[in-house]
Image (tube, rainbow, N blue to C red):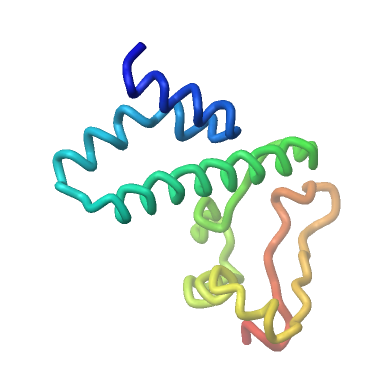
Length: 125
């Protein structure tokens, strides 16, 4: 059994499953860049943490049972004349949460939540 295989088995036992799968790539990258042991360990643990966070986010979105996923990056400003690019960028900054402003979704009745207009009173104007 190779050393890489042994490391992968140990990582799986420690529940570092994602890193165990990606370990050969991480080792090759460290060798090519001549990384120190400390930097290599930092890369390995950062990779595992990132993958766990991605999995947790995906699980939460799955459990929320949204009909589909929409982001502000996908929002088409050409279809919505009442919202400017500047206002959309302010929404993306998420400073409205820290400043305790309310976000109000408005739109004509019957179009569904996914087509509603984004509007924020006082903050965007």
